[in-house]
Image (cartoon, rainbow, N blue to C red; front, side, top):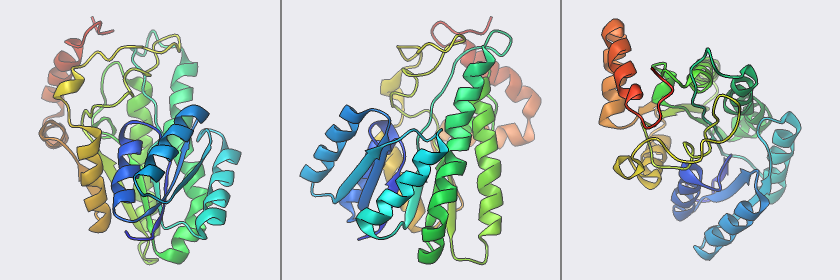
Length: 268
């Protein structure tokens, strides 16, 4: 990955920031985006102090024009795009019958359409370089999670898109990776949207018992090097994907019971 130009959307916190460090430590040139200028500036300063050649811009992946500008800015800065990591994402927590549909649309706009926009504008340079398109999906893209209507739907849609793209790129030399972390310690649950669109504020899960963002980033880096098609992380995640394929009815009950035990669960 030395001297490879890597774009990471949502690169100012969580898995995105950990990926910026992981690829940067291996000699990659890092271009990150985020919606908060202060967080972006701070992350870029930290990366540069760490010896990484880093640049970035404020951008909202749900806005098509921002993605076009992102691709153009990276090419101006580094002359190319080798790898696009579609990491920016948002979650939500409410049962379908109670959620405002605008909340579901917002999640889809970021988690799904944001990936389409970014990939559309970065793909020409990636094709020239025979590089990689990486989507940070979730176990929720294999198994629908009650109380996570918009999030699961967006990840199912994302995985369908990446599967199509991987097949279309079959003879081009472009690598497409669908990375599916299990529950990973990050701030995504704190920023998760509730039924009315307000932020949840506190994570309902025990973050300290989850895989760290740094460990997750190391796995994704290795999968990129090996040009893997799928990466499913955590024992719980692998168990969920396997069992859901063969015992979906039993998994309905198991998943319901697990999610109902969350603090302040919206499930009865």
